[in-house]
Amino acid sequence: MNNRIIQLHPHPATPGWMVQSDFDGTISVLDVTDTLLNRFGQPGWQELEDAWERGEIGSRECMKGQVALLDMSEAELRAHLDTIQIDPGFVGFVDIARTHGITVQVVSDGIDYAIRHVLARHCLGHLEVIANRLVQTGERSWRLDSPWASARCQRASGNCKCERLAEQQNLHGRVLYVGDSTSDFCVSHMADFVLAKYKLIAHCEQHGISHAPFETFTQATTLLEKVALGLEVLA
Image 1 (cartoon, rainbow, N blue to C red):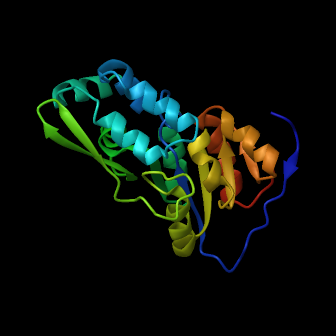
Image 2: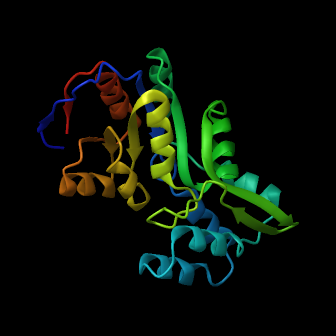
């Protein structure tokens, strides 16, 4: 991390801050969908991943096709999700946000069932989760529904994070967005401030997006308090 300072300029006319956070690779240590595909995916899911990476299909089409290739029972799914770890500092991050009256919302292009299960194991089941909907269609078969998709989404995602962020800006005034990778690129341009890790750091630097880099949610908690108090933030 460098020592460049970005000065936040509070907007008195707005009600305050809220937080939207990505889940896979941001809150969770690993991308949960990837772990499911590696363990339960039938042949063909990697080809869909490759087509998405080449830009031939959107993430919504990719995810729907991949989930249809999962061969697992619900018991196997739950047992696998019990092994998924989250950043140990995230619980404290949520607690500090609550202290400042800041809502934390999880917004993901991943799988709602998986996210809720993992959060509940860490006493975070109260958090609102907006993500693709997992539907069981047979004893070992599944479907992915995308109630949060948008025809206007530039990434053709199952969950248009840009629309979700705009909704919260209308409600709360300012949104602090927390993310890590390519699914967070578009929305980072709309956020009032970004806490960035992994690939999102370079994207924010390249495009001049107001942000602060972090590696753990313990660090992010300190940055959250600075943002909430309208102080300077290292970026």
